[in-house]
Length: 169
Image (cartoon, rainbow, N blue to C red; front, side):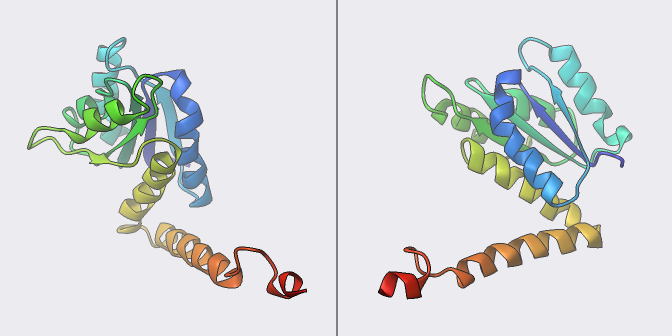
């Protein structure tokens, strides 16, 4: 299948977080590619990746980065594709530095910024699916099914203590 989402990160150490985006994309049946692209260590690779993404069939880019976290913004400066930024939790400031670096984009260069860490990566995968669902009925069905199953799981198990008959004994 042709990858529709580019899942990039600034370092291999970002993979445990970004793997959550990959898992969500897989649940939704969305093909993706993964690559380490460092804004600071491989800037030429970053520019080449961003500039060629659309011609390669990529429709959404998810970019995860920690610390200075320039990757999502630099990618967004080189493409008109939607870029979703995932702040990777850092040791120094627990991801707050990553979040602020990604969220504080200048007007005119948009990056959709998600939550810090695993939840942000999961939601980036889901949001990429929702964007793609605007033009793809199969992805829309997968997104709707995911959301409905999530809701039904809670409705089927409303007692936080488990089976209400067992806890009543």
